Image (tube, rainbow, N blue to C red; front, side, top):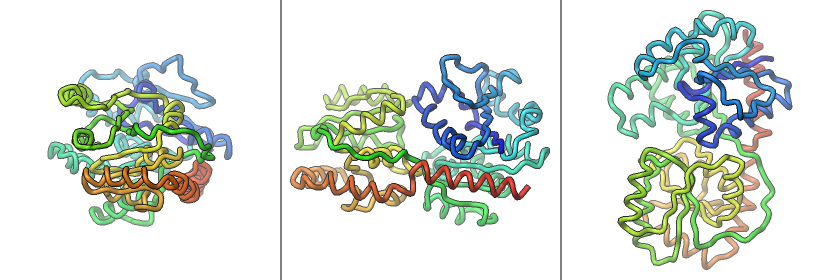
Length: 372
């Protein structure tokens, strides 16, 4: 079985490497290759591939080595309509085309039209919904709506990572609902080894964007009576602005940049508390990884968080800043909470285990191959 995996439109090996995410993104495909001897070919939006990257036994094709990359984003997007025709000789012998995230789906779907290849579109979050919640420009919201509708109608299988995303799509669009299913994000389950953890420092991991609601974090630090410091791993457009606010308000919050996924897992184990103040999410990998690494997760009470956290059973959900301090005070007074949550999460996270997810993905590939 040979699978062609298309990166998210305009994402490159280099961009994932810079974000510390490349090893994580490839790990599920390594697992599938190891267990089921699947052959993978990756199409990336690079001009040349970084020579220092370990590509394992995978084949990579940098799309912009086959066609000139325009410097203009608009022109690049327009020219992407022609990309499928540049790639046909490379996809002629593949069994399934797998699009990673919605953006770029027009390329695999065009190849499907020409070569009759089944297409699986995998989304980690709903781009149309996110564009609305981010108050994007109207033409961008319309673009994502049209692209979502097109992809739902013409893909062979469309996967989402949460029940909330599935319900949103069923409500908003008319399509054959038998072709959509939930495949949550994966984690590599680990046995929690008891170790000393920071109880006066809180960990946060995520992009430095408005979605993550860092102003709430600043407000919490400004008003809390607890002696706390917050460490944030991630990068984003708001970095300079957030650093300025931190200095002006003299707050104990540290922006530590990106870290390789494998190294970030070691950081989780150092902290007792993990905090997320997001106003909306998909199926947040950071919360799954915090739970997997034994942190007490304290997260905003939004739909996608509540799918992963049952308040007081394996984490805490909050509505207001004051509740964050109440939760922390409760944890300080009840030392058994950490161990209790660790045991509960170990049993609940089986659904996200990479072994389980890889089995589901293989079955999806198999069904698509057999349907040809």
